[in-house]
Image 1: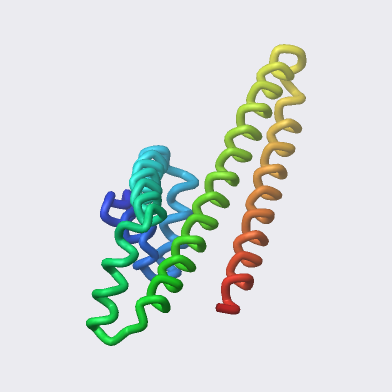
Image 2: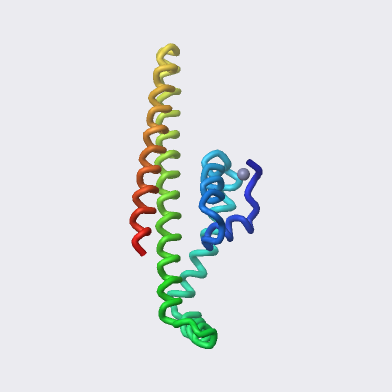
Length: 155
Ligand SMILES: [Zn+2]
């Protein structure tokens, strides 16, 4: 897959792209540092804008606009809040998963180097332990992702 453009991350964060594309983006993140930092930047911007919303500057304005359009302002605010919460939950899960992966990678790399210096034949075994741990982490993230989706389906 090609690198994701910044506009792609903005759309991703705004929940404006199809689920299949989101999964593609997320999978790409796991293997691309460049896109990971672009994603983090976009997320920081998104958080800043959510803070603005929390100060309720945009809220009343949006409500009057929606009222003019005939849509219940309160309903629209509620929808936006749910969407924000879901987006935030998703981002923190991804961040948590990365932290674990990075920690696991670092710890096991150090261990591998240590084992290498003592006895080089043990390195193969350590490698498979690392693979197993990464697989477990992915399975764990998958199950959380599923739970997360089920939880939000009752909207
Ligand atoms: Zn990339």
